[in-house]
Image 1 (tube, rainbow, N blue to C red):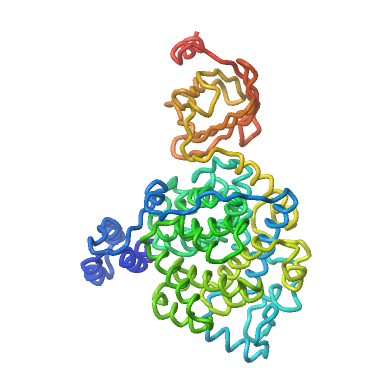
Image 2 (cartoon, rainbow, N blue to C red):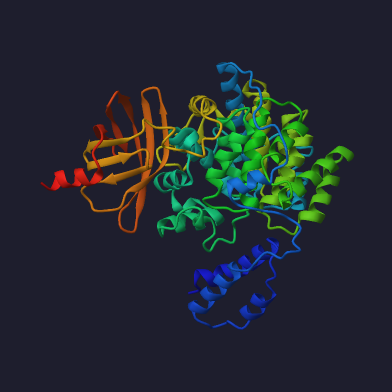
Length: 542
């Protein structure tokens, strides 16, 4: 059986070339390794990952949030949002429903090239396309029948719809203080391994091996610039309406667990566009808001700028598609860059008509369900649920199926209401929530806690939690929020080779603290202390 390195190294060579590395020597040596040991492939793979980007590579593509922000163009980071609670709900619901409509439209022909899709539509006599695809049992697998014309009674399960639910669960837990590790934990607890693919599959496998973000996005992951992160963006745009910078920052926390460079940018770009769609009408403004949150000189920005230029000068979307195919068709069919180009194409041709947007995105091919879903989501937020054409959304009967644990059957209306509550929390958060300082966002000082897990000392000044009876070093606090009497903080417990994130939720009343640790809903009581950790340790042993 081939090792993981043997299976993935050829794909990694392509990825490294696209990142601007000279892989010639590695390729030549790879040809001589037939029949070699796994160790030889592992060493060659590691050498491949150690290659430097060529100094002549014309792009600047960092992967940290700080560096990404430094590489951004100037732009409007936060917009004036003038929506009532009812209007906000309607717009968010429009995003959820629009995403489902685009996804269902593209689902039966996922991965098909444009010419094959057009032949299917022509043979079925449904051009111009103005409804979901008809079902032909000789060509389409039966598994796709629930997403075809006359057979839709709900939105069928799809990973494009699973991920917004996972993101919503993570945001309900962490709100604006989302961390990569908290997203990873949600995946492990709520998403079956067998239903995640490419970069997500690799990242999930890395989590199980105790490899956590950001390394989880790099370790044996040649798919780190593919579309997987981009399709996870929507919920972060819904959760930060009118605040593209915040939406992009939340998307980064999600994207970096499985992707790098343009893979992350794709998610940040889409999240920012969705956020801007709550305020802007013009597609130019929406796309520019997305570009404002990614590096100005990256390959994704270049592709988006190209499509914008072509859409302004040409009226035929198929002619523009040919230009996209000529310049960006060398990328894999589920790569971020070429598919993002089709998303932008769909947005421009859907600016006057929701139907035209999702149909254009799907008919263009490549990752049809993903692109249709993203275009549908942005246009759905832009117009709101009440203005979405009934023929595209009423068929779902307010029902969404999912593989997410505990969320197999959902109501779009319920998901939208939950998203509104999350959005309110996010909109009320500080502008720079990523830079959490426990000295400034906590009750301060040291606190002794009595819990079902034993005694802990929380030192907010140092940003640590110490279990006084286990002998381990203090664990760092990863997030903290203190408003009024309400206190929330998180830390990751290392259990000798595996670890998990713990959340505290409770209240502070003068020098007393009360709440619970999650998971497990473990009661916590405590009080402010002026003693040292050493004093506490001595008293526990006496």
